[in-house]
Amino acid sequence: MRVLIACEYSGTVRDAFIARGHDAMSCDLLPTDKPGPHYQGDVFDIINDGWDLMIAHPPCTHLAVSGARHFEAKRKDGRQQEAINFFMALANSPIERYAIENPVCIISTVWRKPDQIIQPWQFGHGETKATCLWLKNLTPLKPTDVVDGREQRIHKMPPGPNRWKERSTTFQGIADAMAAQWGGLND
Image (tube, rainbow, N blue to C red; front, side):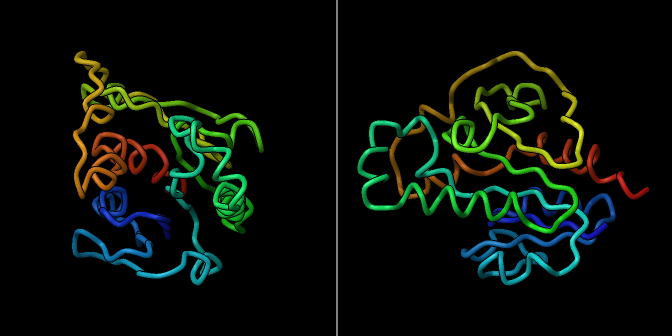
């Protein structure tokens, strides 16, 4: 299966699909953190290249309700509408199956509620970090390893130059579940 991992620099989800034998490529404006198939550039340069599945991680900075105190300024200067337009362009892509992930955000109001909200602790990581999934022609992920230790380490990270990067990287257990459960659709 040809799998596009949109807005991913870490290679985590890409590599989970590759490990299961898929032709997967990540795409981001940033270079990839791990060697592997990666298109550094605009996802819309390659979105029409015949992908069977897309897992998309659009930027949440101007969408997440955790930053609601900044919404008024972001609406006035157009940043929020630009982020909504980007998200919706992914949702309206020609790819037959997709999952678009974001934290709890305004997409639930401006478009529709997510099909599923998952937590890292459902996939082997003792963390809380609600992640919404908007799905097209995919079934919701089934938890693979429910664990204790539901801590908010991600939310409590101290400020630093890589905080945003560490907070946005997909947990390995979630990436593995995506590849295992959604990667078998063409088998």
